[in-house]
Length: 126
Length: 162
Image (cartoon, rainbow over the protein chains, first blue to last red):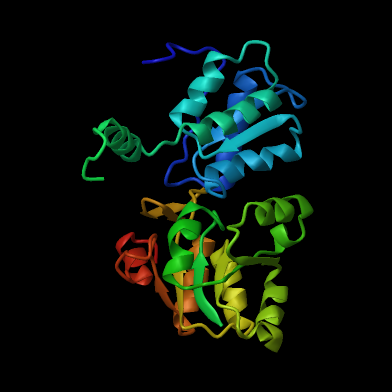
């Protein structure tokens, strides 16, 4: 909807009947499909740090030293990486993802209330 | 003391970390598994992603029993994770002394039969569950702490795998 169709991107799901090993195997298949060799680079995004998908991805580091895994995935971090990844290393993308992910979390109610309070004429009810 | 024993082949994962530890007021996660205890990579990885607020130990089944018997650990509130029902049976027979064990996730494996959306059992698993039940261990099937205390043996009967 925002970034358009993407090349070199695969989606891997955790299903109710899965164990961590099976998710790891599916990640392997996806990396092979993307022609990422054992020493190749890729960034894997996962939801919760310490949860099954992130742990499955982390287990790949045993044989794939150059992959990156970023947990706490959100849309802003994905956009940051998808839209600016040409010629950028996986390490650099992972670092950008973490920064974008953190900076994108905003308390909208607070932002708006603060803006409204600031817009009040001096001597308002405070 | 042991607060909870969960048979779950995902071991430490989202459901456990986000809901169970708090619900059971546990401050120590214990993974009892011979394979992982002997695998430095997996051990290091699991310890690196543990929740910061809890202590975590990864031990073989025999080491787990010894750890729990050691008075130095008497004050720890242990949430125990076991990958296989056969390991749960080994722990029980080794003197673990818990009355109830809970079944979380058991992944699909070749030849396994479906019990619930997230629990699949092989004939070997069923035999271990039967032994646990016959030896006085109550088995429940709760994915989340808010789930009803389903009788796991009844679920096995309903799935026609007993």
